[in-house]
Image (cartoon, rainbow, N blue to C red; front, top):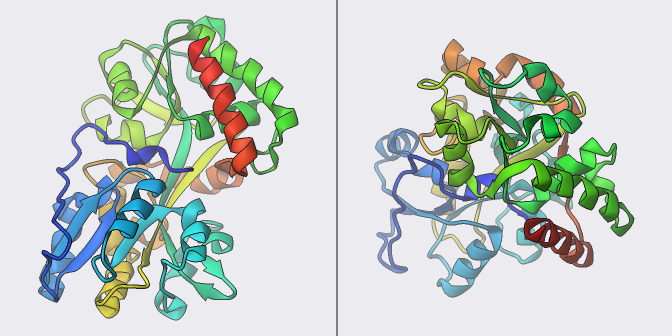
Length: 353
């Protein structure tokens, strides 16, 4: 299973609204989402415009969403937010409805962010990118040399021993290790694992902790560590107003890019309104609200969202540097089942080291 770092709850996450199947009114819209969609500032404008209620259930991990859908009755759910690289899997399972591509603002998206190779099958569009960002390096600019953060080998070197937290998710961090070794995340093989393992063990030797999102974010915010390997705008943006010294960068070698997509479920009994919701989320206004959600921030797929963001918000998101960042970032590794198991074995060995 692959998924973005953002499935796990961040500080300040809105509460999940989980309603029992069959309890929704016919005119309601029912969506399986990530926590950034639970912000009332994002949902209420759509509800008010259309005079309906949007029932949200937050989930973590694509496997969980697929299990929830399997346990639900056809028609219980209308909208699905899903990791961009997992869209083909959902389409193959027959879960996704075709979207009206000509009604989606993909021509306004950042270059390469539409990810048509994932969101379209046989010329039909089944999902659309809504938000993206980077697993990269977050750090305290008061306590580390920013120039050191531009070289991955320096980031986790002995110079910063015991001042590093490693984000506990194998795919993006092994992706960073691959990039540090000059390898492309899309082309990893079993032959690359020894080099990745050596890099991971160096990280672990010099790290104070390996932890999930909240633990890593808290460690950085409290000064327990000065660097988070695998962090990014999603980790520090919500802290930037009170702690502007907490920031992030894309090293010269590059970083790993995450993305999330939204689509309509094939069994939805309210497809027209579900499509309207997708169109709202990908509109400039919806995108600006989603980008700055109280749960976690991230880059909006639609560049025109910039017209609805403040200069300060755009600065936190590194708006003016996205062209360079996108050109240097690589997608998550997408291993087959065999390689995925081998990668998890290497990760476990690192954790136990």
